[in-house]
View 1: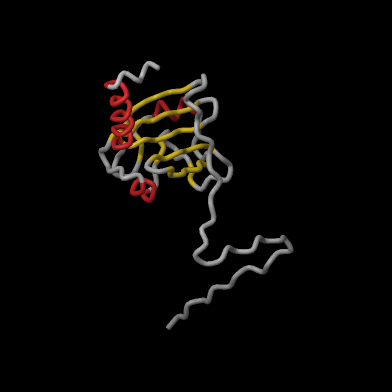
View 2: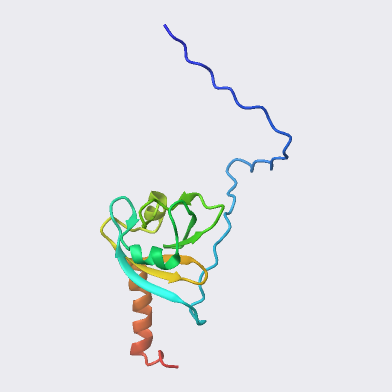
Length: 155
């Protein structure tokens, strides 16, 4: 009978390592900057389908952002939307095909299902992509249409 080798950890290096956070302590990730839609800028808007694997079916937005295979992406959920930017410390990577993939925890947190449409807002100058699910777009439009009905939108 063959035995299983025990796991041996590599020796510690002389490099100072940060102390681990206490168990149960949430360590905030750096927040990507949201595009300011009130200022002028180079933006692209699109709608796309989300497939069962979380892939956003819009190659054009990836091309416009100039994201390449292997680029690291930071994907952050803010309320019910996802903010994605290219950053060296990003956990996720662009695949060889020019699609952005929303990880399952983000899809669940944003309440977006396979086959849903999402609104994509890309700030090309900042390299930031915001993904808004249908229910978020519906809420934004409902609020805006309320102001239209009240005659407040043009003020």
